[in-house]
Every structure is written in C-alpha cells, then in structure tokens.
Length: 79
Image (cartoon, rainbow, N blue to C red; front, side, top):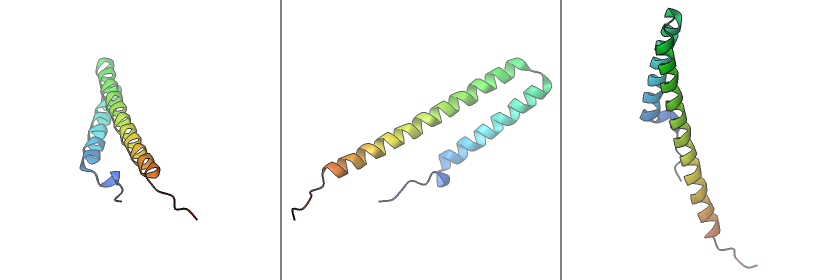
C-alpha cells in the first residue's frame, strides 16, 4: 500500500505559497493601519485553513473506513 506524502503534493505547495502571500499582505496592512483590509485578509486566511482542515478530516475518515473494511473482510484460520 502506497501512503500519501503531503509534503510532495503540488496543491499543498500552492496552498502554502498562497497563505504566505496573504500573511505578508496582512502584516503590511497591519503596519499601515488599514483595519478593513486586515479583517478581510483574516477572513480569507481563516476560510482557507478551515477548508484545509475539512479536506484532511475527509482523508482521515476515508482511510479509516477502508482499513476497517479490510479488517472485517479477513478470515481468521482455525487452529
């Protein structure tokens, strides 16, 4: 069975770059005192993180269901 390595996933690289870019814009807005823009940036970053958490949860649930089915389908030999 091949395990999923999230460090090599291009989508995760894109997500990290996007979060870093938004984080940089957020820091710049906070330094400039632009409160409206910082609230929008925080909302966007929060939405991205919530979506990422939902995807990870979905992966974990799917993996555990598949593993549970494999355990139930195994035949135990009689001694």
